[in-house]
Image: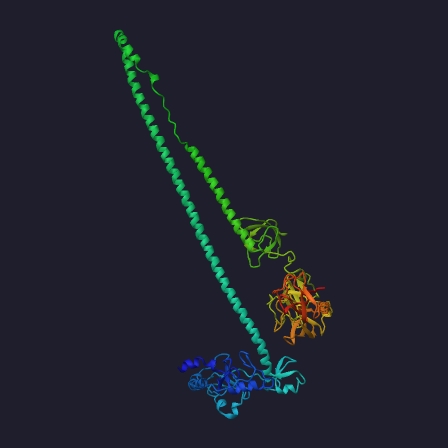
Length: 636
């Protein structure tokens, strides 16, 4: 039983002090804390009158009553009495914190005291639970206690001006007059943002996992479909072979039957001829005897012998078979050729239909006339390189039914390759990057594109916000001098030009301007935070390419100049669209930003409120309808 309790020890820890619950209390949302910890946490909010759960952030309008949880208290006592001897024997492993008071073996520490600046195992930490003077010390999960390298004091304060943790002595020294807050306060604020980011990450992970599951199902279904197609093809061709064998046997049987009939006829004719020959030989002997007789016998028998049928009385016979076998051979050969032609035609038609479906499903498939190059992942094409390289760009001349294609490269005409080895090249991308990037030259100001997660040659000390000068361009490689790193090497396709500081973009954006994130920006470099594309804020500070904006949803939001758009196009509209004006959706608007609802293009309503670029209108079909100022027009 004790082992089971110890196995779940982490779930009985207070999330504020990270220690086992002492005088445990459970608040209405269901989370439990030490009574002293939650009281101390909420004491800072007494003036505001708002109380939140440190874990789930649920808000309570009034301070909930804190009553000691008897069941949890008993569990804590059992956990304390059964867990010490076992956990005290746990040795510290590589990278783990050891107890500062254990002699001999390195016993694993479980808590660190910020006041004592020492780490303790389960046995040596007990005085901090029992001794009244030590109970006030701040215990945290065992870790290396951060101290100020200059004053050797505990880091307790966060300097927002310099974005670093400092000690109390630093406040009177290097950070005097800076914007500073207690580290716990800054942690709570940043933890809230981090929790929101974590929630988004979890939602994204969940969505990606569902997408992955669906993809696995689709791939498995596709594989099963391919297997069924193979089995069905084998079955159909097997049946076709059986049909051909059956018809072949029928033809052979018919030939044999006809042969037997013809042979029977020939046998009968042969027998008849043999009988006629026998009869003629007998007559020949009779005539021969008569010719050798004397005159009286000759004359007496002449009439009887001459009156019998002579040679003209026998019918002539000839063998005429009903079937001509050379004709059969000729017809069988013709049938074979016709079957081959039809079979090839139908199979090619099937392949063509599959290819057409593939091209229809994948619009980027290569077709005749497209510009292509060999994929970077192909080490050696099936029909060899010849004079072609990965950088060669050619035009597709012909695509064969066997998925091979003929390409005219500048280095080699009528080059043969496989369709699967090639990738299309956009018209404006023959040099391996966009037209803008192809124009990158020595002296230009550049930065890494926001869409590049990791450059080919890694980040080094450079970041998305870094802006540097090009010192060399050689093929696809570019060398840039950044303030953070000199001689940084990247790919031309990874870089984008940055307007000079005196450019129109910077000239238009100045402190006090009302701005929003461009609709073309999917993910700002520094993240969304609490703002959206509809958020409108005021520029507070501009430093080079970075700027700070105060939005209603979030103050001190950090962004990049190139991500923002100046809100000025709707000023005239706002002046015209005032409360009480009769308006309707412009005919050029296909779908309003916030949807139609019950409103149509023929609906006419009255403006009841204007907030920045948003306008609220009462239509007969729908009251309180929300739209964008630029979507509306005044009705006379």
